[in-house]
Length: 334
Image 1: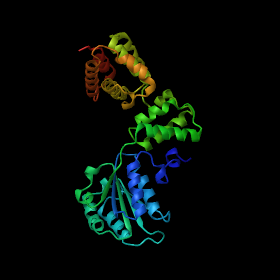
Image 2: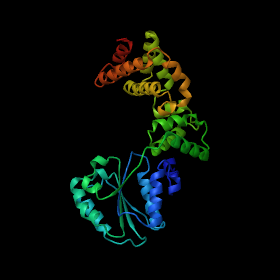
Image 3: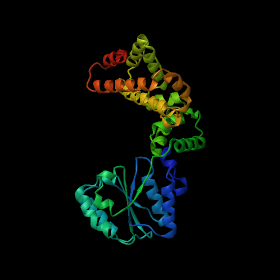
Image 4: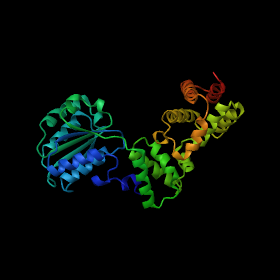
């Protein structure tokens, strides 16, 4: 069965989300027939590098032929690169340009890049190289200097949310109040967001916050709010009961502490910015946020709590009795 990521992958520039400036540049280059033979697309995972490269290849070839896609991770040796450069010197039979899209290009070895260098310096007239990478610092400067570089940005939560709503409406997926959570935890990756949605709709056709947290293995915000308020109130009994419940349910306490650390950081950000749109907690929880942070010296308190949870993260890395360590640290008021 076709995945949502495949079904909703953009096939033209008008469908690309969150990269308006880059799309405008490429459209202008195609319109004026003024583009480089070597390009470097740089950006976080899931933001559209390979998709944009495919669309660009199809546009300059009037949808004739197919770009040659190469995984840089598994084709990174000198011999692999030599095969590519030999192919690059041959004219395409079914399109104007022979386009090579080389993904994860930062994994090409130093020797491999050296073998690439001459071909990149003097590329065949009808050959286009589009290198894609998430780690620009690993690409040799000699290569970067010979490519026209384009940087992709993370897709905004709003753009991701709008796209997820569009997909849900097309797919008749119900109960979409969990989409905001998916958008926020995808950290600017459209591909990741759609993959999360695909997994969640297989779990339940109702994309509620509760179903999203259960399906994706994230802990409920309700639990985080409860624990935080127990700590604020000094309710040691409730803290111990909550930890016992998590432990007896067989949940991963290391993951819990890791996610709780992120939760406290988001509360601290809200205290500083007073804007729910800049944090990774859904806006539906804003009343709970306001209630929890409504204490004297909130910023100082949550800074100290953040430090305490960070210490817990460090202590339990090699701990054989994680639950006890967490309990001791959370009950300690110092």
